Length: 450
Image (cartoon, rainbow, N blue to C red):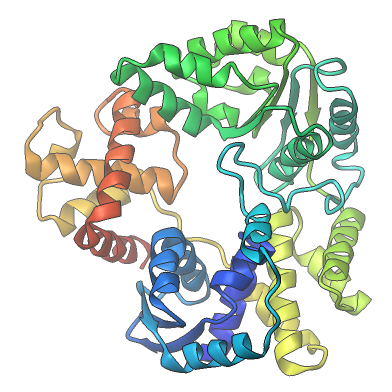
């Protein structure tokens, strides 16, 4: 059982992986876990700005990570802590302020215009036999965009480094040619933008927006399969960009030939350049990844620990990094190397398998929570007391379990995927203004996962 200090330190390690270094220092460095009462965690923050920012931007991420360490945690609250504020004031009084430091800090955040995360670079990408071809193809595109391989299509299982690699291309091109217009976008965001544009009568504005770019990078393109209209729009966008010598980059968890529901004409376009697979990293590559990541943290991990971690976590790079970060955090807290048993304990907790939850389980839990007959969820009824729970089910299946839009629609009464997209967007919008719904979702999630 982790102490409250250890729980928060381990959580911060994982948060740091998902934010820029400056963003982490700005919003998380001066936070503290005040208490954990009955599954409700209270986080101390220095001021109201930090409180509002963390709630609006990072609340779900914090709760998700906390729950990975303790499934009994069901909610997170933020409280202004005067001790932290005083400590920050003392530090600020003694510090020499750098001119325009706020402006410089902005360059570390994900750019809202191109969506690129600056932490993804070729310098931090570890190359091994499992990703050598994909890396070489990316280097070729980086040196001669739109001339060598167009499109570049990279595929492989989740956690193998696809997003890192394709964003590294974008970041390099952005750095070497500041006039290039680059966009990184998930296929889900592309689909949502398209559906919203059609419904608002702004289809032409949508076309103009996406056709202006010199480099288009689309992640998780497999999610557009079985979406007829979105596929058609992507097909025409592809042709427009390709005909004008613009670079197109895709990632997917499957080879185009094995994406069910993908139109043949798109399959042909995806195969027109080069298709490169990232496979499961072998033992030697896993060891190299761990050593490089430890080096980036300026900490020495004993070789026997590296070998043990690499042997216990056979595939997912993201999981490897998470375990390593937990170990580094423990070492820093203790001020000395960990015992073999302590390492084993961390790995045991970090690689805990998630409870298998079916779509029917989610439907049943939500129906129980709102005290409605679960059979009504599948019917075509538009009754208000059924519509909202159904939208919540769709939202949870998408956000928490990454079920595709077409699958959600099919399983919930044969609905069209556009209905699912609209429902998810509707819940997202309501959550921005309705704290009651946010609390309801927390309780529902707790019911589902417990």
